[in-house]
Amino acid sequence: MVDIDPREITGPWDKGYVLDRHTISSTMIGYNEFGYPEFDTVRSPLGELVYRLKYRHDNATVVPIAETVARFVGGLGICPEVVIPMPPSKQRPEQPLFEIGKELSKMLQVPLNTEVVSKIKSTPQMKDIGDYSQRVAALDGAFTVSTAVVGKEVLILDDLFQSGASMRVLATAIKHAGAKAVYCIALTRTRG
Image 1 (tube, one colour):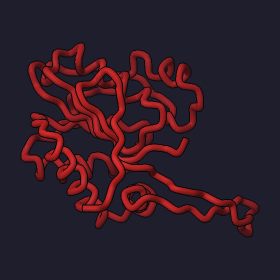
Image 2: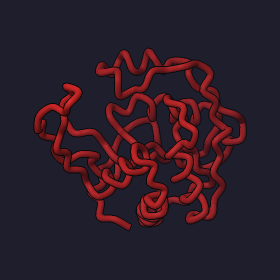
Image 3: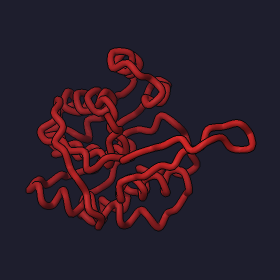
């Protein structure tokens, strides 16, 4: 369990939170030998764990991340019946969010379902689209949701909250598919 600074987020879900900032500061310190800028980046403790998992393939971070989420969810007094990770926009051999979701589902003693949501159209990474309305347009019609969510309390798990466009579109689709309640937890948020 790591120290976090959670913030409530509003949207078409019943409860939603982002657990901490991803980066606290990032200062350009010069250029490397290939002419690319280099930065001195300070991340929150949770942001550092997420960074190490996604970009350094450090699987030792999965358990402390999942423990942090499980403890926070337990403190909310909600009882999700299924954990659904946000479908990835970038394909990787191992999906970091799915690994966290697997561990979290064990800790919460509820199933992880990576199949209930299907991404039916390719989308760019949302972090590469600056405008909120362009993000929503890029995500329009991107997801279908199976009837496996009907009558269930669903926990959507995401790694990075920037504008909330992805989470809003997915939460709306899950509600329209018949979920009883939708809760959203994003691990980190961008600065700004």
